[in-house]
Image 1 (cartoon, rainbow, N blue to C red):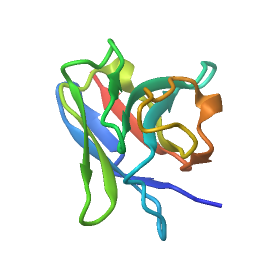
Image 2: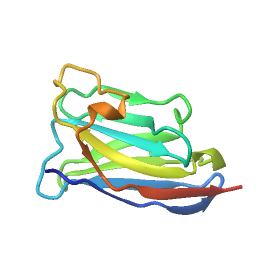
Image 3: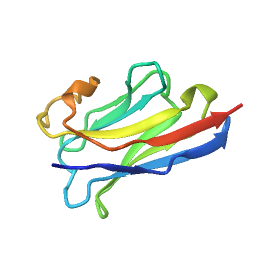
Length: 128
């Protein structure tokens, strides 16, 4: 079982920035889909961004396009979600997830059901 771990959440004012990180101790995410999702109480978990580390295909939700950026550090096997220009509506628990079953030629899924490994989440709170 692969357990992912997020870090980097916190509280910021609107317009601020945070960088979330995601690791999978003992496992290499360098060839799989890695997705970032967020959830607020009472709402469904939504896909924020994803990248297939094997094929390079990326997805960024319209709501965060131009503000959030994906990256990966191969040296330390860490995924990052750089979040700039944060808005109060970005407040949520953010999760990273991995889909080890999708081929490198495919686009990563936006459905949480397709991801087989998850982190526990990190809270991001943006105040106005």
